[in-house]
Image (cartoon, rainbow, N blue to C red; front, top):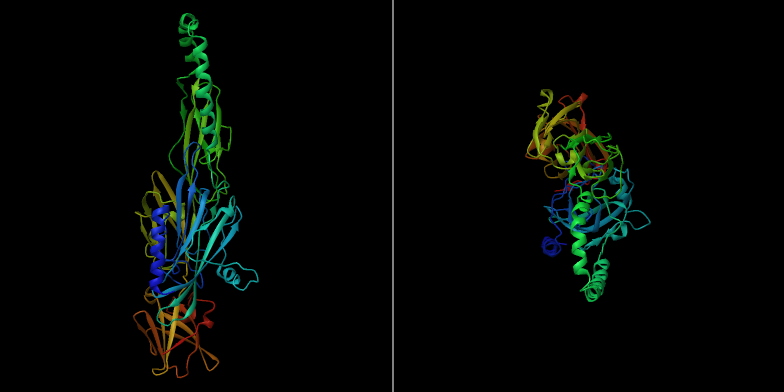
Amino acid sequence: MNKKNMAMLIAIAMIFSLFTGINFGTGKAQAEDTNLEGIVAASQCAINVSGEIGSVAGEAAKPWSGEYKEYSDTAENETDAVSKAAFTITGSDDSSTTNEFHYYIDEMNDDAYKVKDLNELKSLDGSTATHWIEYNNQKISLSDYAGKNIVIYAKFVFQNSDTNETGTVAYLHTNIIEIAKETDVTPTETPTTEPSQSPTGEPTAEPSQNPTENPTTEPSQNPMVTPTVEPSKTPDKKLSVNYDNSDKYVKSGTALNLKVTVKTDTQCTYKWYKKGSDKSLSEKSSYKTPKNAKIGKYTYYCEISADGYETVKCEFTVIVYKSVITVAWGSSATSKGIFGTSPNVKKITVPSKYKKNLSVNAKNGKISVKKYFSGKAVVTYVIGKNKIKITVKSKIPQIKYTATYSKKKQQLEVKINRFVMSNLSHVYIMAKGNNHWNSRCYKLVKLPIKKKKNSVIIKGYTVKITNFEMKFLLNTNADTYKAWKHNKKSKTNVVKQK
């Protein structure tokens, strides 16, 4: 598939979205920020899921859509069940053309956060059973998964436009999506039957029988009865209730106690509900949220009733957040990933000890690791009246690299991204030529190695290099270095010949 055909597919998806209301936008398949081996950096790749989510009883379902552009070792849980669900896949790369599209759907347990790692996904290719399904730009319905929690995986095979080589693979996955048990609700029977009988039957009978008798008797009996009876059946008194309606933040794995206090001296009935469900959670004046709630935003409410009083509804908003996050050096974490939503962050405070390592942006709740650190930085988020402490850990990122050998210049040129180049001190290379591996460690400021933009050039390779492995050193002392992570299958990386 060339770039022209790819552009045509994307255009068709965008036109389709105008008629369906489904967003088929494309985004970047994020690989550099994930620290997962073997994920190819690609742009304009996405899994787009759409459908409807139910709301409070009596209200119509609302449109819902989600776009997924990242690969992580965990998958968050969508907070609402999605009905009439379907998905599409788009894919392309800046320097390549997507040659193949595939998808795979995995059913998850209620407590499952972990998604399949790359080895598991790649093992599906060699399985005797067919797992990956070829995708041809169609809309895939998820009605067969009603009542289940699923994760959708997408696999992209790229063809380099310059070399016409194929086989480079990238992966994406969605969050854990709950598919609603009832995918279609058609409340059309009740409204059509009853109105057809009542208007034609009863109104014609009574006027024909009592036109002369009742007019003289009913006015004399009913005027005095109605005013005295109705006020006792229609209460106008209000219960006096105290409760804290501010947003509540609770770290994952911790329960939160919600409570209402009735000041009116009367016996009351309590019923607690979670928004979107009519199942009663408690009949006490308090309710404790579940410890195993997924990261995200939840709404609970309590209905309080008493004889002679109006029913009072007290609503609570609870946000479950990650208390500990791990961010790769050179990567960022946003407030949505931490809290499951994007709250209005007023301020983010970083301890002075880690200000050289971390940078923050309160506008979007983003925290970035500029420099690797081995400790734990406790960062404070101020959201409304809440001060929330988040523990940030740093991890070493995974590095992508490619190499070209020039027989004429007798040199190996390794291309690395700009961030790595700005932080390198040493490189450790194992190069293979004439069926032998040769290992060397180089300091970047000394010959025979030098920097060239986003490349490291090593001269003096008189033997043709066919395969290579590379590690990147953080410290200046080669004896005490800590290596950045690299592709574990780097020994299979074939060196391009120039």
